Amino acid sequence: MTDRSLITTGAVGAIVAASVIPNSTIRCPVCGTAKTEIMPTDACQYFYECTGCGELLRPKPGDCCVFCSYGSVPCPPIQAGDMPTCRPT
Image (cartoon, rainbow, N blue to C red; front, side, top):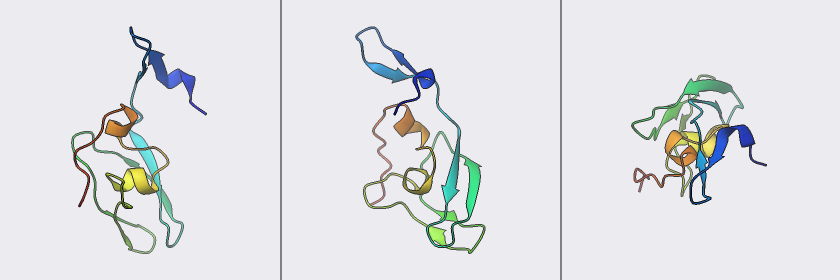
C-alpha cells in the first residue's frame, strides 16, 4: 500500500515523490537490534556496523545500500524513483 501523503501526480500523470524520508530504521538480521539512522543523500552506504552485536552489514545482492537491504525505508534515490549507479559489484 502506498502512503498517498508522500506522492503527487506529475503533469503527464506519472507518480513522483513529493518528499524524501530522511530516516530509516536498520534491523540487524543477526541479533535483531534496530536503530534509526539518518541516511546520506549524496552517497550510498555500503557498510553498517550493528550497535548490538558488531556484525558488519553489507547490501544484499541487487540492492544499492544497507538501507535498501535492512532498513524500514529505502534510500533517498530509490524513494525519489531514481536508479542509483552506486550498486556494489
